[in-house]
Length: 365
Image (cartoon, rainbow, N blue to C red; front, side, top):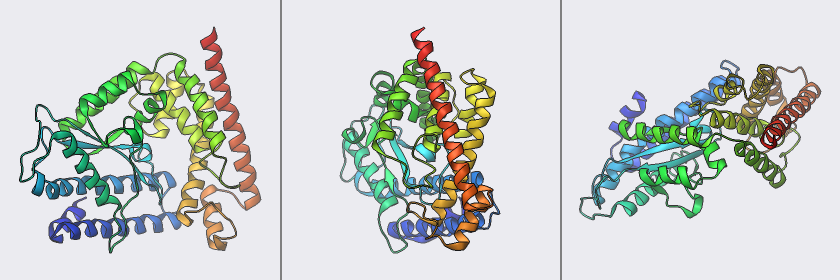
């Protein structure tokens, strides 16, 4: 972080700052990738390093974006805004090609508009400021693109405003949000913005989880959502580790349900999985099965994403790529890896269905 801040101070104008951030991030992504490729760092640590890298980049750019925007429209009215990392960024688990799921939340207090050469009322001010942040992260520049950004997890999705007032965020979560949005909220983490506003946003998060996690409706909604997801998208090839029954997404959704049902603040997948046995939602043995499967599937996913951004093709990645993949998975050959993948996904899918079925029976009783 200090290195990036120093580079931004020396960069000069706004566009040079954006390019400096891209250059810095590209260098660090390369270092992380090399360490991973040489198996010098465990895949879980690699995931955290990629997430730290993204968090530092967003945190460093956010004040630069605001300062540039303020030249025309004045400083942020009210208490300003925070950037909320969702999905894998919030859970601190990115891979080499991850995009960023973000939400911007602001608190205007009593301010009706900004004060500057071209003042804006608060809602369009923060909407346009958010668009400026998206552009800063996604624009193709001489040093490339920093990250792809997905804002669909904001309240009301594509139909909602790109920036959300704190009061609206709270009322939406308490009165309008669907279960899948509460599941997503278990992973939310502020990555940039004023500390006092960040604390208030996290307080809303915890209040929501503790208010909305009770009852069997969570598990019924999860079962319905799971069925829709798998009907809409089949596993992308024989080596798919993320999408499909018994794969990463299946485990992650169940882990999020543990955090939601227990009203637990855990964000990371491994921590959420530990909530299940601790809260009496699954047995300790089932928790160990899920955690072990998740580690294996993540190693496969992370290695594959480092080698290619396409569906994993063992012929296309070459002998060196196959050797790296097998080393990461801890298997002697592709046949053994295929057998373990099939065995793992079958066991996990059965476990998830059993947990969902038990919750449904409890609801009926």
